[in-house]
Length: 176
Length: 389
Image (cartoon, rainbow over all chains, first blue to last red; front, side):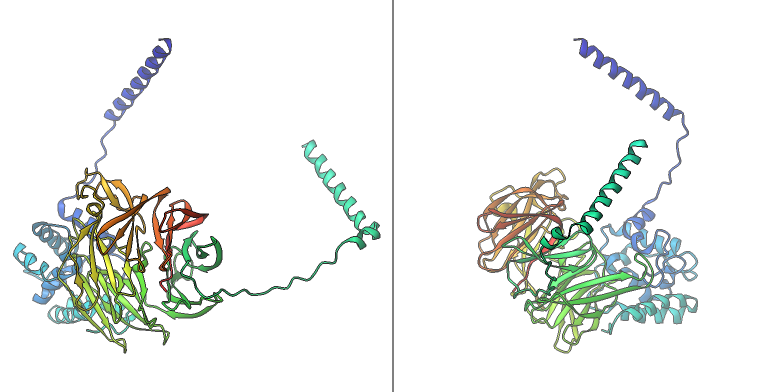
């Protein structure tokens, strides 16, 4: 009985200490944590690991998105190219979520790169393209064609060629 | 302090006595045996046996063991991001290596090392384009059955395959496999790669090294019940057993147009309730770092099993279940002496079964009875390769 009394006493002390701790915590100002909306959160979870949390990663190894992604909206083939990339098309997201994500990448991460008057992606456009992911193609060669058209239509997009040029130095006879 | 000084003096006194002893007693010196000069030799290994196995050991090597005796035969350098493979004729070991000039930074080099299987001498190094650096998976690299080609998975992070002509000792091409990963070699003439939409990309490689890529329709649900990247293969027959996290087995005859069999399920074949994707559904499931092994001579599939919910596919197993892949039935359950993360099996008529703990041990077992023949405790990693002679 006496032992139980001691145990109860200790428990009471712990509780007191705990409530004092909680009181101190309640009085401290709450830290303000950033709250991410859906598109940036999905970007961080699904893309940021390689492309970098701000759309910049290892240059020449991973394409830069910051200030560049929107260039692909210069041509119809460019618009379609970014949606057919396997890691875009296969994303474990609904089509509305994926549409929101891709518009975030084009217009927010890629701020300043989308041509004047470029239309945001529509859900119908994303839905159609994600059913035709790139499969049996040389992605490097396909990208080079798309980038050639984009830089012809929008000369300011010249930086898009850097990634393909760097890739070509590492790969061996990667032709269709 | 005084004690320490005293003991130092004592040590010096003993040393002095020793010296005078050597110089002062010629009769004692004459009684000493004449030391023979050591003859050093370089040993060579016998012809490769099906009972050899090659586990990753520590963080800087693979160690070659004789499974019959549990004795070490040799060591191959290879760190955590290397990949190893036996040549189909048993005459060469290949290790794909990546290193940086200054250890963890600086100019990067990727190359494929070839070691002679008799002498373990490094005989060739083939320069490679940057390969994928990922957690060790056997199917990051594999060879064609004729020993002519090596296929290495790349991720730049765009995914592709490097095709290496082992006879010429050079890379012949990069083949893009958009959205697909790893290398599952065919019986001859190419390889397939697992894709993020639940399909396969198939890469035919002809005698000149030219590649032709085809694609099949998705056959598994990559988002909800994906297949293990560690799915086992029969290299001689060109058959892959793609096994999902819930234990659905898709026996697939690989080729330019693969034949994908109707799936059967590990739990149902064992007379157990079918494991589902439920996060609270406790059932017997496969799991671990290298949870499967296929035994070609007996057409038996070995699966490392544990009780758990969906998404416990990396958990260690406490039993190995052995299946007849023709009848789709459970043949036997082998209880393990300790939880294990990886398994491997030899490919002969009297197979040895290897089970590896996450803490450095390997159990060498008789595959038919499950009897433990040897326990090796020597910084064994969770992965082991066996020759497929």
